[in-house]
Image 1 (cartoon, helix red, strand yellow):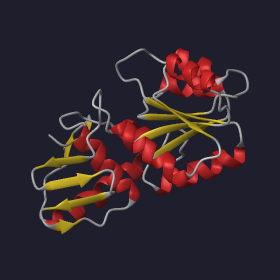
Image 2: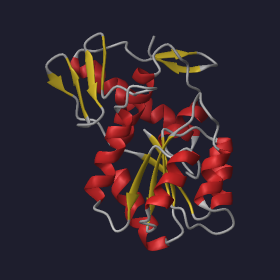
Image 3: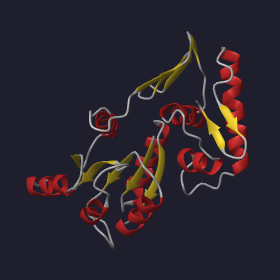
Length: 221
């Protein structure tokens, strides 16, 4: 799942980004509201972790600039503002949840998983197709009874293709979703990534799951 982290404290931003990536998220980072708005205009995200006290454009401005529906990401506000009036204003502006600083990183993860389970536009934790089962929350994938030993990017690619089954993803789209918009990873690495994932699926008895549509991209049909 892809997440935009918006936090002006570099120390906290780096700590959160490191922990979120280790937990399996693809993370982009922004240090102010204007930068965040640029990311949100150009890319799709599943979640936004948003501070309110941001330079150039504050968190309320970022919230109000989000689309009202459709592919709108879930927003978890992380703020030192602990007044009820601040929480009400943020929720009324479009936030889905609010967590007061200081907080435990484990609670951030728990809140993100809770947001993903909400009925409206909810994302299933467990995805299944043919003999494949993927548990996004537990970060576990199996082919039949055999566990798949996947790298974080292989797991993210399999989740992407399963979650959007029937949709063709170009190499550029895979790079943006798996590596993040600021990554210097090349198109060639997508071929290597797909090759490695296919090999592991083949060895586990789930051959032919990922198709290559020539000139278009990759798909699980």
